[in-house]
Image (cartoon, rainbow, N blue to C red):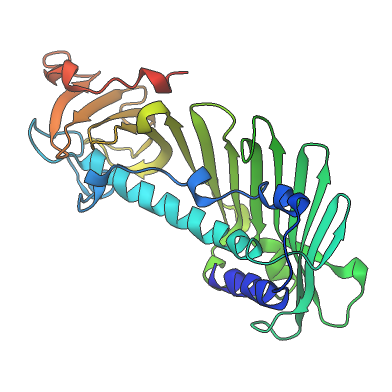
Length: 319
């Protein structure tokens, strides 16, 4: 992400000066901001450690009152999610700092400029409008090439719905194309593509992040974040090939975690494949991250422990 951010700094520096028109601001408001897409994690998440689902052999054999490993994994995944979102959106933040180089009724362009960080490449940022839909591209070409040689590294779109920055959008980084063009991608070399899709027009809002690994040999890793009224959050992700219980097979599980602003939360783990396919595990924790309730669908003798009423009310996320 550092390479792209520097490129956009170059755009902003070269285009500095001048004023924004009201129409310019309409274009810029179509670009997502961090507060639109980042996961709002509870303050209590700081310092809670995870790793339970990826390191322990007795991962579902926790006791009431212990620190929840699921809560720790939720916190770590939330921070990883926000790091990826921040890296991608940092590119767009720099565009907001400078008026466009050229204006047409439904088009704005920043650049083109020589990319000082990548000698031999030119860079520009293009936005186009059609009614309430905006499309944008961060484009490159080799210095000296023609107007038909631009290719897009970052591509995005936004369709407004219920006011400023409210609507449906998507953006992605085409890392594979950059590699084909001989453009340095830095720390993104393990990916072919990074996608974000989001809707902010109604609660609960939704953001999905997908990492497509190099070569397409494995399925994309997906994180889905939703947020409801009152600061309630939800994260859902797939965890493949972990050893949940003693047996001959590894498990693929889908973990859905929900949390309240005070740090209380709930995790629901469903086994998609493995020794106990179809099994479901539920765990709740208090504001200190300590387990208050446990339910194991496969345990006929002791299916639940603790007080189910200790689990927060997350019905606002059931919509």
